[in-house]
Amino acid sequence: MHRVNAEMKSCIEECLRCYQTCLSTAMGHCLEIGDQHTEPKHFSLIMACAEICRTSAHVMLIGSELHKRTCRLCAEICAQCAADCERIGEMKDCVDACRHCAESCQKMAA
Amino acid sequence: MHRVNAEMKSCIEECLRCYQTCLSTAMGHCLEIGDQHTEPKHFSLIMACAEICRTSAHVMLIGSELHKRTCRLCAEICAQCAADCERIGEMKDCVDACRHCAESCQKMAA
Amino acid sequence: MHRVNAEMKSCIEECLRCYQTCLSTAMGHCLEIGDQHTEPKHFSLIMACAEICRTSAHVMLIGSELHKRTCRLCAEICAQCAADCERIGEMKDCVDACRHCAESCQKMAA
Amino acid sequence: MHRVNAEMKSCIEECLRCYQTCLSTAMGHCLEIGDQHTEPKHFSLIMACAEICRTSAHVMLIGSELHKRTCRLCAEICAQCAADCERIGEMKDCVDACRHCAESCQKMAA
Image 1 (tube, rainbow over the protein chains, first blue to last red):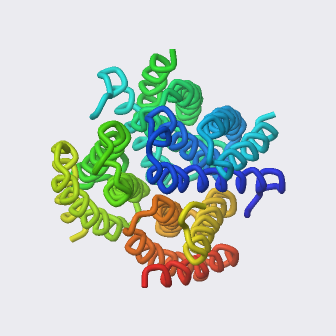
Image 2: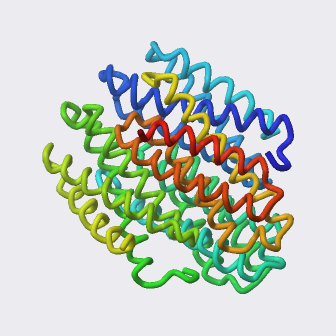
Image 3: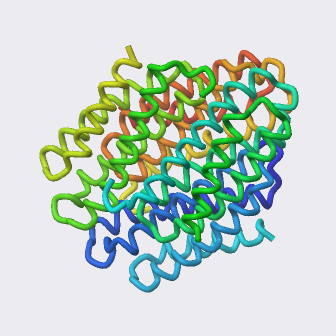
């Protein structure tokens, strides 16, 4: 990709991976199981996490210096989503994707 | 809309109006005029502003409590975009939309 | 908005209204009621409808001639979403927003 | 990812790769070079291609059967974007990403 250094390229990948995992987990796993998995507090958090990850990648791809701020917010929300997925259980992929994305975004935001 | 109070409804409208104005100004006005209007610093800022406004509305529509954080970030970026559009000139609609959106998001974030 | 005529401006408004209605209905009304409302077939349709409406508006705002094709697809999907919301019931706002959007997109696609 | 088979997983990857390449090429390469690269016809096509690729991936991740229709449209627009990037030249990465995505989406749409 044009003018995107290795560290940013890796962060874009983590954001898009976390976006994919959160969205497919919510719409597949959570909807199917129901119960705690579709309680509005959890379901809206995982969907909001998918959206902010998608946007964080987008702002890096646009080449804007604002990516530091979107990455910082993304890191916070991913950490919160990881904790909530862990609390409910049975969503190890989502916990891992959120943690890796949070770590990568934290570095980009520094 | 379901469970969206009047103040939030108004903020969603401002975010979507600012998103529309930033995106159509960049892709219409800025691309046509060129020069300062397509310098990467300005063009990437107005495109990133469009994206964060779109996302800020989305997180409110999802019904997530995280909207306070996305609104706060949206307010900051809109203020920065308004200032840059004013610096370059000939973008009064965009300056106004960004200022109104920043004000509305600031209230939601409080 | 720059270079957007009255008919297109109206279609963008309908798309964004339908996007808002579908997304807030799914994440508010449907999640809360559960049962038929969160069956994957219905829930994924209303979420996909929200996404294509969002994109249809975006392509018009970008100023691309491709908007005729995204509007045609949006009209088809909105009609399908309206029918499914009517089948399940208790979603009159969503049925109306989808029908109005379908009609407006059909005209733009012509 | 939940309930996403290997062929669909590969198509999602192609769509997100093409989205990344189109967006970063437009906002990096095209804006920097200017001239033919920022003529509205080309620039709006590459930006619309990025958007439809992003949406095509999203609809697959949502788990909607409508993905066949969004994939078909994505394949058409990617083919058109590849041809336009080839006409202007100096965008081999974008031509390749668009062709691979078009091919993968064509299969999913079948």
